[in-house]
Length: 165
Image (cartoon, rainbow, N blue to C red; front, side):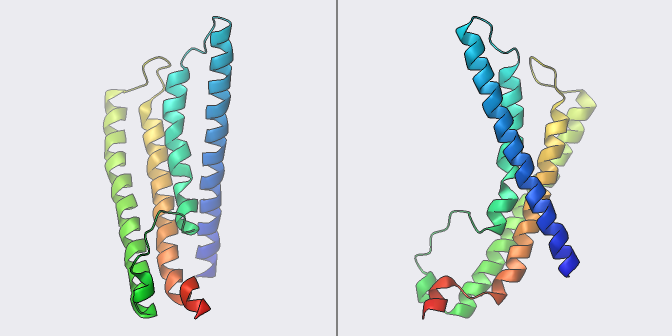
């Protein structure tokens, strides 16, 4: 179990690094495009590059967000519930989130197969969209793994509000 946990942590870290590199790439493309526009030579295909890389940026950070419990939550009723019920809710939320990411991965995988069959690509640079769709699938599965790990580990950890009492 510990080896699986280390492997998952490595995948989550890799996913976050890929998302970070994607963000740096987007920033560089936008800066180059803006400077180029100032001199009458905008970066050809900047919109294609930014649009496709944003997939990597957004889904690259999802696994880290899931691991760190960074998703938006509203804990209005949590202080009123028992620790056992709060842990059950955490477990259910983690498994539901993982299920959603697996469904996203499956749906986008099917779409990627169709994109590949039809040779779909971006407008200007003709980058195959299937590449980015497969990346989204992989990053969604890593996010699902992070949420499953969080759901399995969360029941063993007391909530911060309950530690204080």
